[in-house]
Image (cartoon, rainbow, N blue to C red; front, top):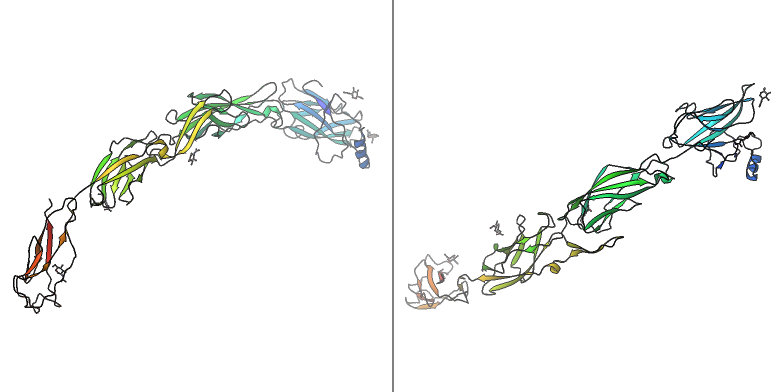
Length: 490
Ligand SMILES: *[C@@H]1O[C@H](CO)[C@@H](O)[C@H](O)[C@H]1NC(C)=O
Ligand SMILES: *[C@@H]1O[C@H](CO)[C@@H](O)[C@H](O)[C@H]1NC(C)=O
Ligand SMILES: *[C@@H]1O[C@H](CO)[C@@H](O)[C@H](O)[C@H]1NC(C)=O
Ligand SMILES: *[C@@H]1O[C@H](CO)[C@@H](O)[C@H](O)[C@H]1NC(C)=O
Ligand SMILES: *[C@@H]1O[C@H](CO)[C@@H](O)[C@H](O)[C@H]1NC(C)=O
């Protein structure tokens, strides 16, 4: 037995072999004879327990997988030191598929292997060993033999895919895992042949502000620095997984395509110069002005859409400001009529932000090891990045109609008691344009029986005809006259 096809024994555990359920030897002892008498007391005790039954020896061999030829190759001997016996092996690789991979010399118990064995296919063969009396042809001995296949590093770690697509938020903080790679190595899971380490092979484009890397042991991909969609939207990364084989290491590569998702790192900037607007009083649903902004983020995303807020100057709720979905402008509208006589101007203070909270990432330092020193701010409040815009909305005076002091006025008159030309009373209306008052004129609009006249300047109503309670124009003793007050406004 030399070098590559080692054989070893474990001290014969006395075992009544019925099936083949064998223990792996715990401490291989090389160069000892196959046949072995139990010596230590533990086993003697065990032997005593099963004294009644016949005791069998269990033997174990090891063979390295993928051995180069020539074949057949000698592995070891099972010899019961009795030339009246013939030896047989039964089991997988001998008389079961893959048949003929192993054989035993009937006479001397030498075991041979006829081809390469593969640890990844069969890590262990369990056989029945038969000793048959040459004379009587009777089965004399039956014991279990174990052939352990030793793993060599014949497998490279394999990624689950050749290429991965990964989306990463621009606002992602350095050091957080953006993706986890996993490579599986088929070699023995308990050996370093399957212990995989990861590393980055290349990053394209390279970027002084973003450096991707991978956790050697866990396969966590992360970056150092800051992402910036406007600087680089995509990265192509190549990673390698390498096993830890003692003499030969095997490796494989995969590609990870990083797609940066644009997030809000550009605040909206005012473009409109407007500091003043004018709106006529007494009108609602009227656009006062449009305020423009620019935004460096991708159009029509929440990082780009402006949100306007009136901070002050709108105590009576006269204004609203809404975003034009196409132009992103702020449309300032009067929703509750303004009154020039109450206030002639409104000082509005307006802020603009985006639908999505603003973040900012700045690199302070790039130490050679570990993460960089980065100043990452999230959820920055609008007031912090932009002073509110001040807008003066002037109210334009329009001619307010005169108003009667009371809407209805009544005079009680006894029929036939007044001579034409007798004053009945005075009507009064007030001009509402207190800043630029107008002159009011009065006119009769409806006087069906022609019983009154009015002085257009003073509003004095005078009787012009004889009033008759039984007139067809009187109902319930009431005669109805309608008077108009008109101002002279332009
Ligand atoms: C095994 O035992 C036989 C007979 O006792 C002896 O001739 C042979 O050298 C031994 N082999 C080893 C490897 O000890
Ligand atoms: C083999 O069988 C023969 C005849 O039955 C017997 O005499 C002999 O002792 C046996 N040998 C062994 C090793 O059992
Ligand atoms: C990006 O951020 C948004 C909002 O915080 C979150 O809903 C989304 O899952 C994130 N996407 C990725 C790929 O991390
Ligand atoms: C306001 O004006 C717009 C367009 O001039 C019109 O479509 C809308 O119905 C108006 N709304 C009200 C409440 O008057
Ligand atoms: C008086 O006349 C005016 C105008 O014709 C009319 O609107 C009003 O309803 C009348 N009132 C009465 C009490 O008849």
